[in-house]
Image (cartoon, rainbow, N blue to C red; front, side):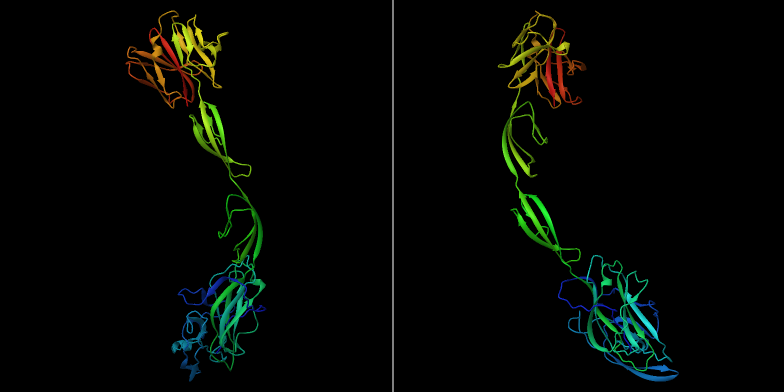
Length: 487
């Protein structure tokens, strides 16, 4: 009887020690085989005198059949056991042809019922890979398999390939697999297998009319499709701040230089990388800074309002971190005033002064550049003070009755200033029933209110935008105006 086996026309038989990438393998040891049995491809029958099966039976036997009404006996030889290299050898699962008569007689080794043209007609039997594999970007693709088949000149195996999902099949060899009664490995390569998106293989057993044939039938095991590794190389230029770890993760370098690294490429082979590495360093520096009221660090990330030592990080000329230590001094201007009768005195010393008219858009009062200013006309006045390299304007003071006794409202104090939303006022006990106006920086009243007791009070500025505001505290006789900065 004849067997079907893998052979590929015009293929290059390759046994190479070169590393390979395995694209497909099948040893029939799992329940779900990747091979579809008994298809009708290439003029094959799905149900006939013989068929493809998968089992691990190697024992032959004897049986009987009927032809033209006459009984005949037949015998099936034992299928040779497998080499030690097979998974679960020497009697693992394998793919083979078997006759329907042998199945009915429970003889399950590899056998076939040869066509005689009288009782048993010639037929073909086909199996194929169930799914395609992709060999895109792979070279040196080859198929290898172990096979055996005694057969005869008209009973042999063939190997086919398809590159269109199994719609059409191409015979790889016109020489049948036969006259091989022990397991033999065949490896076949062909450039047509390379860079295919839909490659699959199939095996056909041809059962032609013959008068002489022999078992075992065509048997196949340990199918493997692989590609030969093609190493690749590339160059990269790296500029790195601090230590650099190569793409493989195997080495970390701390110094500039030329290095090599190896990672798998798309075919699973070596990708050798030449690395031109420049290690750049972080830098550090310190600076002493004096600033009026607030200071924003060079990166712009933080703004500080108090003295201290602060750190900031910006890129240096190499693109690495420049870490700056900032010794910060925040300078302020004393804008407090003292009123004695109609004499207003700035409490700041060692400064320059310019008195202004609050009711006239803070216009300069000509000639009034002393620390004190004697008011001769009722109005609202302030002073612009330059001190410690900084400049600020005091709160406005309103005088309605020049020459009257000292306005006790000047004992009121406010805090904090600058404010983050609330301004608190400490009001002396003898000053109840006060009113207040909240003015913007242009002197326009934006809110009015009153205090009915002499306890500490607060004014909520959370609904206002950041900037400069004036709070006017007054009663029926006197008033006092405070300048407030809202952050």
